Length: 322
Picture (cartoon, rainbow, N blue to C red):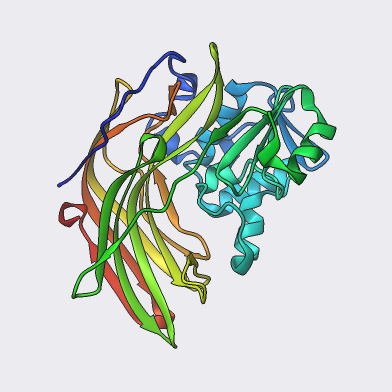
């Protein structure tokens, strides 16, 4: 049984942003045919999604979390939008903000932007989301040229890489706290093919990004489990691999707590075959909101599987061994 505990305070001053978008396990299987997006909720303006309010954003990102890659593509086509997610799928070698989960990437344009009411939120590669009030395009342009010297409100987002330790049998495992109280625990299987080093990544991680609540700006906190395939680049960093692999997340149970909220049950996961994208399952059905990035207590078991046919590589892992 995997048991992870991150120590740290978690003020719940923003109450529960997004609780109105709570979905049941049955609703999590809903296809795009039943997913209604109205022009009152979101529209595309100059290539950027503009949401009527935070509640509309919360509802849409929650439903996207339970869609397949093809269903998300259909949703984009229906509203006439081209997202950062589809860009990253088509441009494996030059992905942008690839540490953001697919459902959140679907709501960003290729510049890393979306808008809520009159607030433009720009996600930069420095790990900060910048909030430009009054839809000030001139300020956004100036900010892009020199974000370091700006007084614009900025808030952290995403996941920070953590140290990993290799064992004699080629397995790599690590867990650690990361800035902001987020958590990342992973089990990795590393191998070589054609002179390139690859690794299968089986992980649980917390994703954090800014959210607007009744008391001002705070953080939305989501917990994911995922299966991914990555390769080592010449500069030593890891990037998403483009080879097609079959990924399975078949869990028996999970129990997690965060900011006074408890989520438990079985996975929503199954088996998918994807190229250039991991298989992500969001474990909490709505975002937990807090005035600072939240801490999680996680207990999980199940069966994770990945097969890369072109490499003749397969690995199966149970989180209990993590």
